[in-house]
Amino acid sequence: MLPREATRRVWVGGVPLGGGAPVAVQGMTKTDTRDLPATLGQVRAMAARGCELVRVAVPDAEAARSLPALVRESPVPVIADIHFDYRLALAALDAGVAKLRLNPGNLKGREAAATVAREARARGVPVRVGVNLGSLPVHGAASGAAAMVTTALEQARVLEDAGLTDIVLGLKASDVLTTLAAYRLASQRSNYPLHLGLTEAGTAWSGGLRSAVGLGILLAEGIGDTIRVSLAASALQEVDAAYIILGALGLRERGVRVVACPTCGRCRQDLGGVADAVEDALRDVPVPLTVAVMGCEVNGPGEAKAADLGVAATLDGAVLFREGNFVRRLKPGEMVPELVREVRELALTRQGGSGNMRDKRTE
Image 1 (cartoon, rainbow, N blue to C red):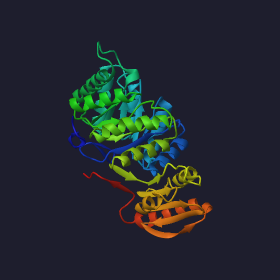
Image 2 (image 1 turned 30 degrees about the horizontal axis):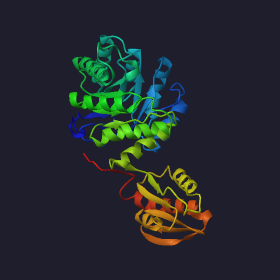
Image 3 (image 1 turned 90 degrees about the vertical axis):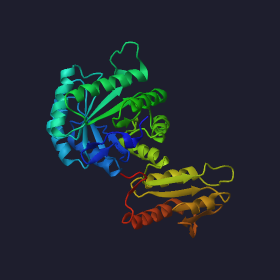
Image 4 (image 1 turned 60 degrees about the horizontal axis):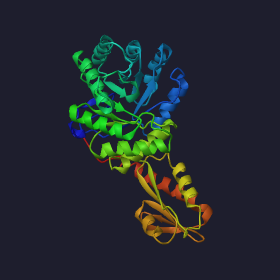
């Protein structure tokens, strides 16, 4: 099984994948690509949230005609998601996209893939062979994870035979165990960078949990060079979920992490509501900070002091701590606005120093 440092290095625009580069966060727009203003607006919002690569669906020629302006105006590299018609891939390359995603399960014909590979190589554009369990060609007795890997490597061989070596593999199923098996097998049989994800994972709640389990296990094992969390939810929630997964493993840290006690009979306040309100109010803060919202005097003061900022609830309000130091007492109605204000002030002081993001692995 190859560690991340041993995979090939592929560049998507100015973003490196593989070869020990930080695990890149990408997402996919939910808008109709033919609607350029809506799509560009969503791309900008995703980029502001920390998304480093954005994929857009290209279902037809009209969508392809939006790509030149989208590529020109996007703050991050644009990836074209292509199915069925290889001519759409050629149009996307002409538009200047930074990467293609091809699904070998529905891109028919070896020569079509080879044609795309030659044009991509001429432009220095990598291709992701994106295999989904639900759209596999028949592979004899092989099924599940083994069939996914066989399909991906066969398509990669077609691309390599046409001269393209900048290749990324994606092997997605909707269940965790098949996904784990596929990526583990692929990491044993090749050194291509791996794009991690569960396809059709589910809602923000259940799909987020499944993604955290599946992608978290693989990342902890050293497998995976870029991730996209696929949810039946907003594109911004997908980006947030990706950073939560990476942050939990100490791989990437971005934004505010709110820790909150689960509450018990000792708590006399709506602590869950306070924690939700604080988290929602601070989603736009990119600086890595830990904020504690604690419910009582048992372990609250200690946890709050250990955070960059925190509150520990009391019977008649709360106590505010900043970097381990007591600041002042708060009334119940002041907990959210005062904590948010303090966090934003601290973020401003740190933004000019260590930056907006911490990567635990450097190149």
